[in-house]
Image (tube, rainbow, N blue to C red; front, side, top):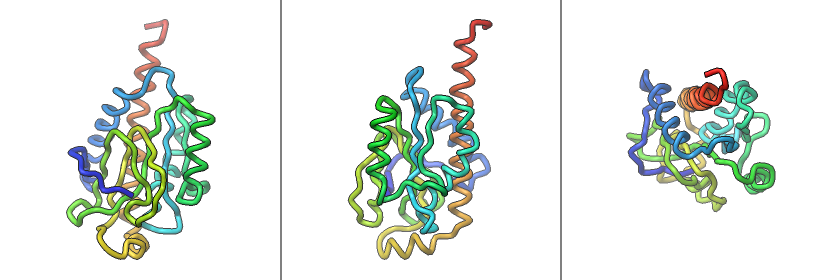
Amino acid sequence: MLDSINKDYINSKSPFAVLNFSNLLLEYLSTSLSLNQELVILCIGTDRSTGDSLGPLVGYKLSPYIPFYKQVRLLGTLDEPVHAKNLTDAIQKIDTLYPDSLILAIDASLGSMDKIGYINIKKGPLKPGLGVNKILPAVGHISITGIVNAGGMMEYMVLQNTRLSLVMNMATVISKSINRALFNIYNNRFIKDSKYI
């Protein structure tokens, strides 16, 4: 868990959150994802903690759409979460099966009170477990973090007592934004590559 200091924050409660965040994500992916390069969406977290369930909820909400994008892989859902105990295995799996892929990593984070409910995107890896003092491998070429609660003390209790409605809303915004960005990327590439155009 990481509270990234970055200008690219979107308030998940805004009525324009999906539009704004998908446009931001589209900008990041368009400049980073090569033609024919596989994209791995790695959703990190556990369904055993409300605050830490953001990643698996995003994966759950995204999973029906992934089959439409043949170059996109999804790891981390409610049924098969990627968390502290199996993160290293998941990274090894990605390195073995999709060695040249671009990794989009998603995780919950703790931050300042005024940033609760905000979603952040940045280039570079995220550091899972940072908010609860766990040492886990950094992962991701692009990372998305959702600030689900305030950090500073008793982080495990804070995560356990995070409101599910907040996490669900953030997961909806992130998953819809990712799907919208993917549709724009792959639909536009299909049109450009079509011999009929």
